[in-house]
Length: 259
Ligand SMILES: Nc1ncnc2c1ncn2[C@@H]1O[C@H](COP(=O)(O)OP(=O)(O)OP(=O)(O)O)[C@@H](O)[C@H]1O
Image 1 (cartoon, rainbow, N blue to C red):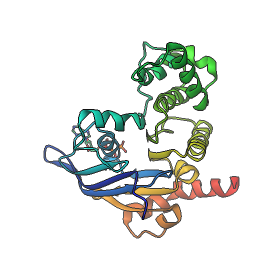
Image 2: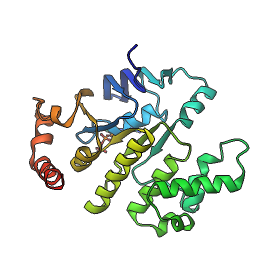
Image 3: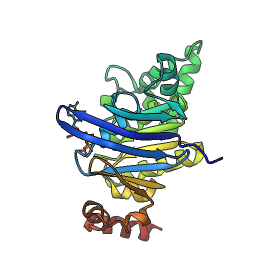
Image 4: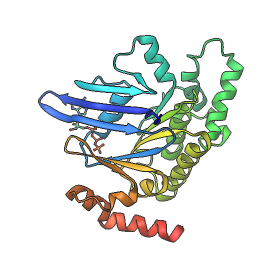
């Protein structure tokens, strides 16, 4: 029997007043893959992410997560789905009055009967998995660089050992070295933990370095999905400009140089 997608969207419609963002949008995401979602500004990448993770109810369509109907789910089923997914928002979305460790402990507090000592140890493990020095656990978000805050946001997203992580522009605002380190981290986590990654990005280097497959949002739907090589063959004005433009060429050259 063919494997079922870990995320399956059918006929999604998202609308704000008269403004239709998505219409009849379909998408499948496969277990273990890193899927990069790209599209022009305002094409609804973040709205799509928020819809899949249950922060927004679409006007129409169906969402299946792990084969379970997410939109029709009762509260208990929904919390079960939430425990199996982690989300990292663009700025890390950390609580400023909590230390990094306390931030990472927040989702762990939902685990019944987890002793405080173990909760703390698990938080420290996630902090180190996200590539932060363990001492960073004692820092407040305002004491960290932007890149470190993103890593802290990732540590929190990983807190409950999710099967899928959603990353909203993980490398936005990072310098090229920081961005490239983050790409390596995401790729490594996906390969080592079998994580499925749904990654919204504008960053062509990230697409090259981390993604197995790319989904392009345009014309209110997922216009096309495929590998980077496949994207180069797509005959659509935005897709062509994006994947063949000067920035795309620079990203390809960098990748070819670094192997
Ligand atoms: N809460 C909201 N109320 C009204 N309109 C909204 C709301 N959230 C998003 N939108 C609109 O939906 C559209 C898609 O927004 P979204 O943030 O998903 O775009 P995006 O593709 O992520 O853009 P960018 O690449 O610029 O971050 C935009 O036109 C935005 O103004």
